Length: 483
Image (cartoon, rainbow, N blue to C red; front, top):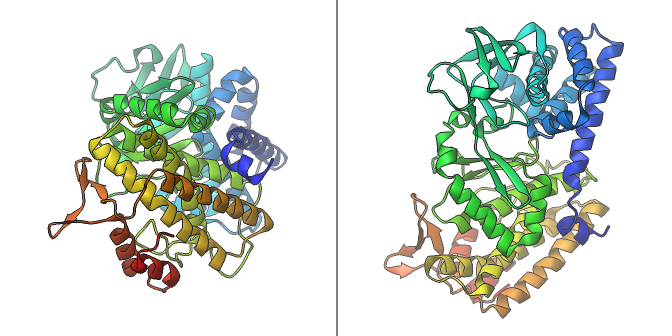
């Protein structure tokens, strides 16, 4: 398969990740089976693994397809490797910090206990009874993998198992019947159902509790937000998915293959939108007023997922002294701060389908007003940003042969987008359209003057290119030349 086909036509990367996580789970079991005294809790993990393996594979797949399973197996593999002297990665260090754990040994003990969450979910899905030898204590809220169920309440819950269709709590002593989920006004520990959207072949949970995991690198408290916010904006998300299906059906087919869970959040100062490589098939979006802006964000964030999956075929950058993953060293035309080369590559990739979405909206000619103006801003702005991003990758990136093929394919695509932009009459003199705090679309006016796309791009360069890396592009913008 050519790099272009991998970038835009391959939908199997999501399945490959699922299969790899299943293989890794088997490897973890084999290691602990041969070294059961390696870590406390190994014996119960092995018992639960055997029980899990005895159930219907379709039920297991439903649970193990949950993004949290990939997160769990990755941390388990790295913590096991650390016992052999391998260094911990950033995610593992953050895991220890967030969990208040002092050593990799203790982290692995804690993490093996977290496998009970998947066993519990599988018991629910399969309708099979399960009793833990050592009760499982978890902080709330807790999403039950592969299901719409969320265990909600204050503080912690201690769970002894699942019998007769109910989760058995030890502290407080209580049985939570699955059949009663979502039907109680109890303020104590109870089960709620998150929204589940169906749009064609796309099925997606709206569940912030999925992201309540240590070491993700985002504030955890927002994931405690009540599910009411998800229900309140479920119709807007459905409208956004319909817009993707209407204007970008090839991305919609990828959503059907790989999207699992989305969390919607209000406008605040924590963060805007985020996709996390350790939780494939997920992203978090700040809710705008306009469904088409939300559709654009969904396309953007999900393509981060796609590139993360593609990267498992091989690295894009050669090993070097520069940290291309986390080292914030280079100008990016999309953010205010310097960015790592890996982040710039991601931006070049995800903004191409965003351009395609807005160009399709404009070509149809069904909209006017602020939505149309925003689309014209995007189709004028994005090709220039892509040009600068590709130049940055070629100037500073020590690319692998695979990475060069990917960047060349992206550059070829970017050239086509520039031509399409011109054909649609895009102009850098178009007014900048931004969003207000409430999410409304408004032109950016400063001193009674509507700021243009050219002016905003130039202002961004002058403020953020602190190392002077894009002098040529700046000169072209000053001279009024479209890149």
